[in-house]
Structures are given as C-alpha cells and as structure tokens.
Image (cartoon, rainbow, N blue to C red):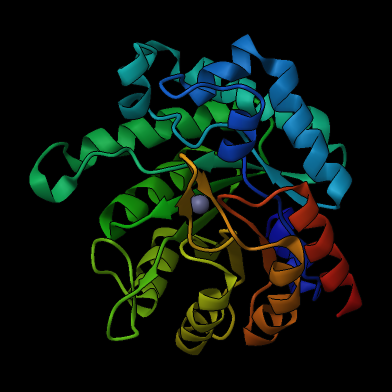
Amino acid sequence: MGKIIDQIKQGKVLVSDGAWGTFLQQKGMQPGECPEEWNISHPDDVLDIAKNYIRAGSDMIETNSFGGTKFKLEKYELADKVFELNKAAAEISRKAAGDKFVLGSIGPTGKILMMGEVTEDDLYKAFKEQAKGLEAGGADAIMIETMTDLDEARLAIKAAKENTGCEVFCTMTFEKTVNGEFRSMMGVAPTDMVNTIIDAGAELIGANCGSGIANMIGIVEEIRKANAEIPILIHANAGMPVYQDGETVFPETPDEMAQLVPKIISAGANAVGGCCGTTPEHILQVRAAVDKK
Ligand SMILES: [Zn+2]
C-alpha cells in the first residue's frame, strides 16, 4: 500500500492544493505560452506556486505538468522534451514539498480515440513517457485528472501503473445536465467510472474541475454508493467561470468553498483541494475546515 493511501486508511482527511494554471497567468504567463516550458524557463515562479500551497497547509501538491504529454507539447514543438519537462515539474514540487506528498499531474491528450485520431497504443505510450518523467523527478503518485473519456482514463492509469512504482490516482470531470444528472463531456456518469478505473488500477478516484464545490457533494455521494471503500479525492473549481470585463473570473470565495467542506467529507470524500480559480487562500480555509472536522 502506498503512503498516501496509507494515511487515508488510517482515517485522515487530506488537504490537496489549488489551481496552477490561473496562478501561472498571474505570474505573467501569456496566452499561447506552454505552461510546462515554464518548468525550465521560469523554475522560480513555478516553485513559488508550489511553496504557496505548502504554506497554505496542503498535505500534497501537484506538479506543473497537466499538458505534459507529447500530444499537447507538440503544439509548441516540444514533443521531444516530454521526459525532461515532466521530470523538472516533479523536481520543483518535490523541492517545495518537504515531507508532504507530490502528485504528478497528467491531463487529457486532447485526442479523441472514438474519432480515430489516435490508437490505444499511441495513448498508452504517451502516458507512459509522461509518467516515467514525473516519477524520475520524485512524484509520489500520478494524478490523472480532468478526464472525460473512460477509455483514455483507463489507458493513462494502466500506463502509469505498469511503468512506474508510484501510487496511481484518477479523477474525471462531470457537469450537471439539464435533467440534473452528472455526466462527463463524453457522457460518462460517476457510477460508470468507478469499476472501470478501479479495475485499471486506480487506488484513489474522484472528480475535479466542474462548476463548483456544491455539485461535488452529489458526485461524491454517487461514487460512495457504488463503492464503499475506495478513497475519494475532490479538486473543485472556484465556481462556474464567468466572463467579466474581458477576463474569466471564478466567483467562489475561499469562505464559500470552506463552508461546504464538512458536507463533502460527510458524503465520503477522503481528500479535498481546488481546481481552476482556487488560490492559496482557498486552501488555507479548506485546511481550517478539515482541521475543525
Ligand atoms: Zn479546473
């Protein structure tokens, strides 16, 4: 049993980190720049993000590697730098983490299997290459996230599981439909996800991104109903993004987010953190809410 899962099995609720993408933009990353390239060109800025989340009380922090497969990096002509950029990402977070955990972030490739844009083998190889870079840089776990296609999620989990010694986690992104049901963009329900990704080897599952923490309560309840044991992690956005004065704004305040943390935990979540729009202040308050529980 891995170290993170071990702590959860001991009954601890773990606090994760908040957004990286929006934080990089605040630090001056321009549209059209490759976020992962910043691990080499602006390592101190990336390190500062990691340190901010550790200072806010995170038990685990992610890495700046969400778009680190060759399929994302080839848009910036960096497809030959997959291993290097992911290793650097994990090294930076490792440096900030101290005795806390590092989750090596892996996001979707942007390629759609069903449309024949890639084969299963292409995806497996791409995720394998990324996961190995993250492990080499010191990641404790591989955090496969924002998945909407169950097959892509399954292949990413298998690739990480079969080629690294890291714990392997996976969260998918769900929205509420007009009928009030939770579905991923590719039509996957939380309950459809559970068995497939556990069978593929995910040791912790859950949901990330989406439209705010309130919806996450229902998602956690559905996952918990389908499986009483599996550790659940939630990385919630700071609400539904709104377009205001030419920029995207995430409306949920740290206080609003923290108020719902006890409900998320009661529903069955074992780890809570933020996704898009959340800040160290959100995590600070989530930490306080978890500690009060
Ligand atoms: Zn997000």
